Picture 1 (cartoon, rainbow, N blue to C red):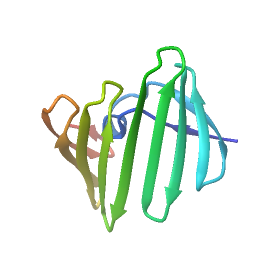
Picture 2: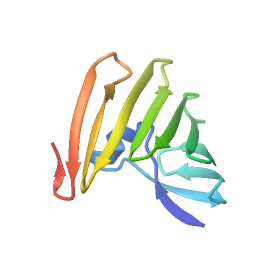
Picture 3: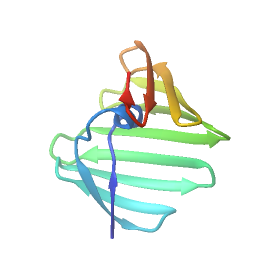
Length: 119
């Protein structure tokens, strides 16, 4: 069993404090995870694409995310628990990662992260 950090919004997790640590069982290609906030996740990796499907049994909410990496850029898209879609890209150049996209409320975002933090 391995511990990984999961968040319903990958991009937020890339620079923000983690909301929960997930315990996962399975393989690198298919895992089932649960966290201390009542969420469960299925993570499937096929080549350069990762599929995340999450749910909370207590609230009945569910969400999903797909991420595909091409070279130094990862393209993300998903649907939040309210059914709103979001999308973004994460591009790493050297020790800096640039996150850009539109959140599930339709607002654009842009964040730059280095080993010293995000701004």
